[in-house]
Length: 93
Image (cartoon, rainbow, N blue to C red; front, side, top):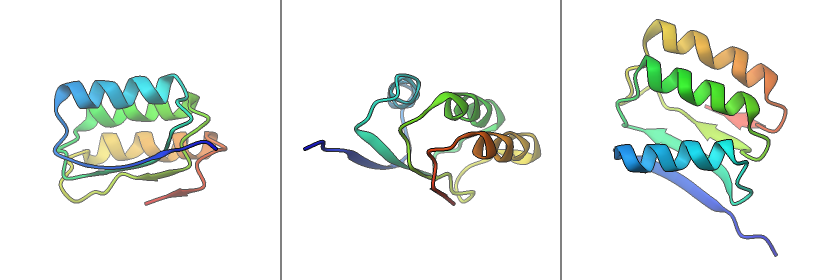
């Protein structure tokens, strides 16, 4: 039986951010749901997340939440292309 983590993170530290990105890059099968509300994510963070999600094949649900994040127009442009190319993400908000 495979256990998985449901991660809804508020106010990530830099270390936690890097850990989540690394787990996404490594296709960690225990990371299937990720919520990122109120993390003050900006364009560069959104771009990094989008690039990582484009290669990820294990995350199934993503909740980026515009509330509490400052991704701006440039960041918002990164996300749709990534979501279209990722076949394992079945739900995102």
